[in-house]
Structures are given as C-alpha cells and as structure tokens.
Length: 80
Ligand SMILES: [Zn+2]
Image 1: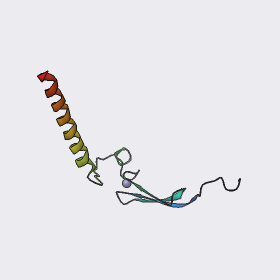
Image 2: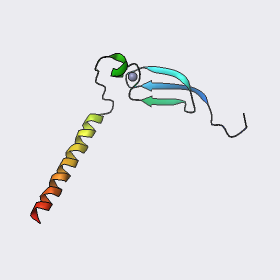
Image 3: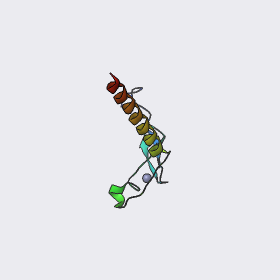
C-alpha cells in the first residue's frame, strides 16, 4: 500500500432506527441509518412502519405546500 493516499479504514458501527447494530469496517466510525436488513419488509416479509424523524409528516407538509402552489398557479392562469 502506498503511504498517505489511503483513507482511514477503521472499525465501524452501523446503527439502525430499529435498534439493530452492525459491526463492520469503514472509513466512517459511525453510521446512522433508517432501514436495515433486520427491519426492511423485503427481508422480514411483514409490513412494519418505522417513521424515524417524522419524515412522513414532513413529506405531507411538502405535498400540501406543492398542492397549494399548484392551485395558486392554476388560479392565476384562469384570471388571464
Ligand atoms: Zn433496521
């Protein structure tokens, strides 16, 4: 290995929102993820709802804003 050109490769801990912890090696010592093989429906075969940081709420708020903006834009077009 050439010196001073490789990133630091160290023991790493991956933590999932479901509580699962995976020990591995990476250039990052800690990774926080929202979904893993322990809780993804593809692997579990069952639907389980994991809303880590109100992401669904945020999405719905964004959606409502977009709808309102679209309605406003449509309203402006009709007036012309
Ligand atoms: Zn998980």
